[in-house]
Image (cartoon, rainbow, N blue to C red):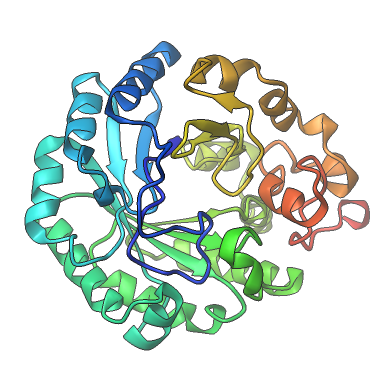
Length: 343
């Protein structure tokens, strides 16, 4: 998964914004020529090519967005888009993006009603616009992912939000466990015990939900899933087969990379440590060879309990949260309640 923050410009004012987005485009954004050159770099990964997710800010603030999507599609890349639910996200705009080549879209819902959602997004009417965009995507048969922020504030509303998501015809519900970066530093996160309880609740919902349930920056959910499958009497072979294609082992810098609006290459958007710049280096070489990425892929180098944990190959902890709390991306994930020494 290659996430590209094509711009930081956005008309929303989200309280948890990782990017601390601004109204105007940054003067040093990759211009159109640089953007097209970057797309050609991606081809050096070879087959299977990464899935390109264009995000922001709001990608629609780039006037060349449709040209960029069209060129990426022409080059053979699968492109998904994470737009902001603003007045610009009309049914006509979504249809035009589909014609340009977008094969998937994600929208954010952080509350089951307008009040809590709009408060987090900072703009009245965002909730209603999100539901309209979800309807338009469904009518066009664009696979839709709903992203939801998980904080101490949003946690009680998740059951009601789950029921709302069930009505939207989505393919995936992804829950983003708060990382204290950007504006999100001011929001209260979960305790380890609350995060553990939530993972068990998500596992229960995943057994009946008509869509995939996934998490971001909470890889310990995979450990909970394996523990639950073992408790249910599944064989290790059946557990491995169940895990195939579900992202077990994928984490910041391992199966994921992020390119910023100015071309910096990060392990993820929530781990702001740069390995280099696509203007002066190959994104493929940086991902494969940069010491930062190599260290993040080597679970034997993790410190504390993450280094000792028998689940570190499938989990590995949130490297972004470790960095946010300690300044060391190889430290233990402080949100994980599991104690390997007591297991």
